[in-house]
Length: 464
Ligand code: URA
Image 1: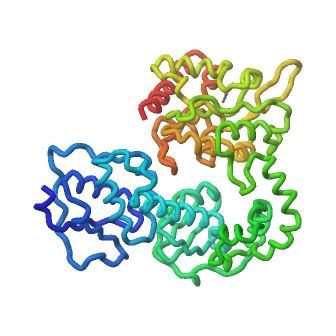
Image 2: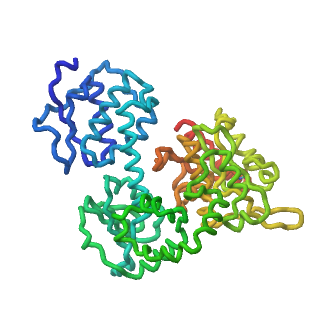
Image 3: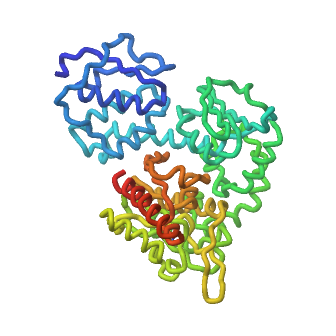
């Protein structure tokens, strides 16, 4: 079959069009087109060979499904954003080989596997740099303030990184301009724009003072090791950093801050704990907000370290704080009843919370639940993010608005967003639903109604 096909050109919609590549690659594999017969045509990128190929052949009707392991897709999705013009050839070659060697990605000595890994790491680093070094300048418009930033990414990361800025700066109107294109957030929707130049972005303005304050508060003392600092903050980014001249005064307090940071559960490079045991230990010592300082014990997440499903509540209640485990009180009882009714085994799920300590007011002998503020949820999000990164669940259920905020980074209306699968940046899918405790507060008719909706949401997550 392969020998009868000449050269094929497969067009991709944009330099970061991983989904387009994946669809095309699937078709080609099912048509039996070997890697050395495929050329990928990418807008804005010079063709890699001079000879235009044929249109892609149709997949064979009897072709088996294409195998692509999750670790391949995770790495490939990032590697596809690299500016290397050969990236799509490399990805296709590996996908082709995976059909015969399904465990190829486990072979860390394989040159193709190493090459994909290197591309993915470079892209991840570039995304991280963009998140750390984008600097907004404020412009007054007829509709109020608009923040504009100029950034020069090394790779095709603008679209992939836009979600991060939407979550962080949801309430602002902003634009990020780059030589490859622009993204604009109007407070409700993201729009794309054409390539820009540095002069399209205003120069210094009051937002710099804001950034300087922000930077001083997040300054990472580990960067004081000069070599590490230059590695973390390559000189090419310095020219746009208003805070660079703050560094000398920050050096003075760095040692004390590094010690404080380690005490807060990060390592001395500001990274979250690397194991679940270290995470639990660090959460127990967390005093980042008033709830952490209220003298209750922290309740860590519970469930298998490789759980496919993660269920996130708001915070431990009275029973949970006493037992040291999530969902052992009345709300947990409602959750378990529903899980049992749809045949969902909660023992294989990871149960955890947006906030790790019990926020309450004491009334006599009773400890009454209090809802955490958005700020407290955002502070505690560091731990949930760390737990998600370690467990890597495929599906997450957010029980109520606090849990949804902890995952999405913004407040949403549960009733509007519930009952559908929402794609998250890390590839997991989110189902938002009500908190089971809500059912305990309803009258009989409303409770039956709510219970049916809750059961449907849970069943969706179990299938998703
Ligand atoms: N409610 C929650 O949100 N989480 C628990 O762990 C218990 C009750």
